[in-house]
Image 1 (tube, rainbow, N blue to C red):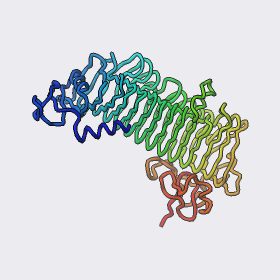
Image 2 (cartoon, helix red, strand yellow):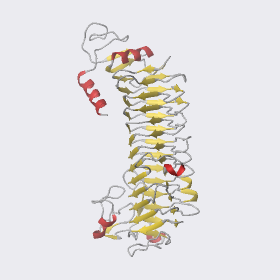
Image 3 (spheres, helix red, strand yellow):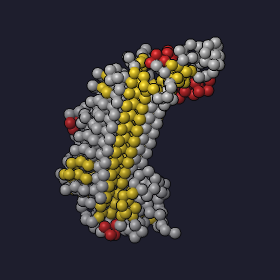
Image 4 (cartoon, rainbow, N blue to C red):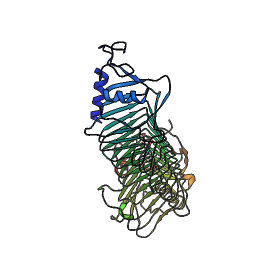
Length: 496
């Protein structure tokens, strides 16, 4: 979005266009005529006023609305000029369920900023009920995209071959077959401080590069077979966000067929048949094409996957070539068949490796494998410094590989056979507290002061167990505290 940021900076510093009156004429200091010099453009609070502001270009442009005003548009508004439009929280553009609100497409790439306005009840037979963007750079800031619909994809927003940035906005109650809230087909999509809620057809469908930061994705329902909250077939990074209460057949929270990096994020109370929280996908398993070099790769760190529901793999269902979960908590997930916290299956692309390091896996439930189930053609699960409360099941050619300093409670089903491991630990010896906020953004289980986990890893061994040095726990507390490092996602600070 470098071009967009430059354009905004120039406009704010020097102005983009002269002042105008409410009908779009060139204004003076009073905005009524002449050749004045105020860098403020005010237009009539009508569809024609919006069209005139776009034709004039530059900005920022505002509109003379007498308080909150709904403008019902007669036809889609074409944006083919660099422009900044600011509704100041008063302007609602309503398509009356008949046509798109905005279309950004043309012979040249334009830079558009839409601020503090509501885009409602747009409709398209094809893509992009509210906004259709092909080939331009678009920033939405403080906007609400609500009750838009497409018969195909992208009920709220469609964006391809251009950069899309959404800041401090709401994308809600939009409807499509897929990408109910947003469908991003290429280049880059950045979502910051935004609420994506109650969209039918899923919250986000991404095939490009997507960054979600400080946002909430809640209550979305997928209808295309994967990704109630997010469907990703590109490069996805989710930081400091909440993905909750979403539903779909696979991947109630997130369906990943690309590359996913998740940090300091909560994935909770999502529902699916497979992968209530997260589903990691091997496309060729179901007849898809191997069209991404990083297909199904997942890294989850400093995050909590909790209280999700599914038949299999309530927390995470993985059939990915490589998955790494570290410094995270997987808790309270319930599978009606198998794999309460994790289900790891076979991939047709080759043997997969799952790395589990410094995690706390506790209070999950399933008839088979309350903690995890691994099955199929030679998936290998490598454990380092984990706390696992529950049952592990290895089926077929699946293998467990302990690298030491793991705790299992109450049994010895996870293959923790190294001298430094502690299987058969009682719940009293483990002494985990409830899932709650023990600091930072995600909830964790804090071990009690007498827990066997405290200082189990000698200081000289910490570097061999932890993924990075200097190391931190899930709450970004530096390790070690005291005489050693603690297995699991939480490092206990000694009492003074």
